[in-house]
Length: 182
Image (cartoon, rainbow, N blue to C red; front, side, top):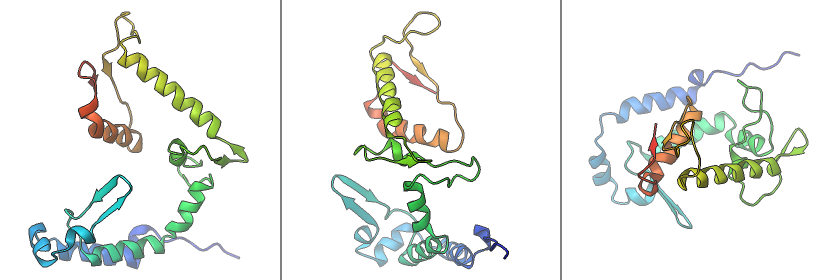
């Protein structure tokens, strides 16, 4: 029995339909979309507790959303999400589990990888980060010169860079002004 070959994303009919749609809507101007749909803000925003997400100011339509959802279904996104939460190895490049969810798991409910609950080590790591940031912000972390650290360097590419970059931009207003971030 031969294994079924999974099509590349760009080979899918759903992808091609989305690409065609993008070419169609490029001619639209965002302000025209607001004129055409008086309830655009309601159609393209979400609210849950104290989190409000407004994506109405993107060049999208209900057709865009329909096509994105069809693409997600064609790639079995729900199944992949379940695998991620189950700690399965879905990062094929590195042959490992994707554990972003573990760092956001404030409930401390167990997340198992290879039969081992990783949450105690995750919380240990988060606590170390909290202690380190307190030392840096309190000017108690000393560098090579024995002076307080005042330059923070983020080294990373791809997702390793994007997370810290987004966090910094989102929280920049709250940052200590005597620290410089690179």
